Length: 213
Image (tube, rainbow, N blue to C red; front, top):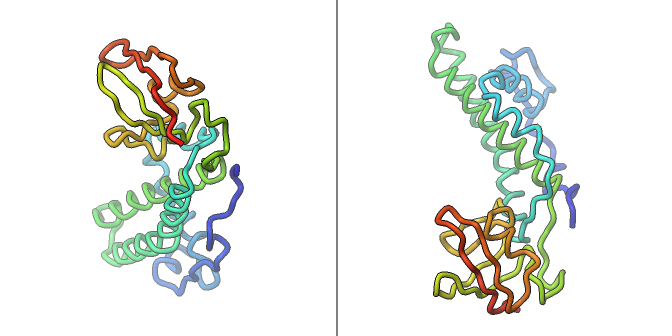
């Protein structure tokens, strides 16, 4: 399933403002939290580095996710949008009440937190717009693909690896990103093949012993 799927609850009614930081921002009654934090974000986005801006505006690749990974990401997005946003807005309201913003450390820290929060929300939304859910048995079981669990031999040792999307990669426990040198080299391989992989330690030969069904 490709992107465009709407995270559960994403159509839920957004929290409404009742004054405080929202009124101070000129939003008044009737403006929702998303609109308010968007205005606040415009103030803080200038603090992002050039590399961060380039990164967030060019996330146009397909992101592979397991069903569990997709659910976890959807839940995280909901928490950021409807819980963490409110918490940061409250911090900004409290900081503004302290007075002169030019020398208000609490205010600047809260605005920095807002920038980080909105960047993370943007990233998650972009991933969910351009994702592909990995379904067991959805491809040729005789060829290594994203989602394959494989038994390999490298440097005289056998190990179990699972090829996953970059967002779920954890090399320490055998979850290898499809975009990594090892993962990308193993894609398309069949049982019995030997694949030479360029690693930081030099060239390493991987033998595909089994594609675990």
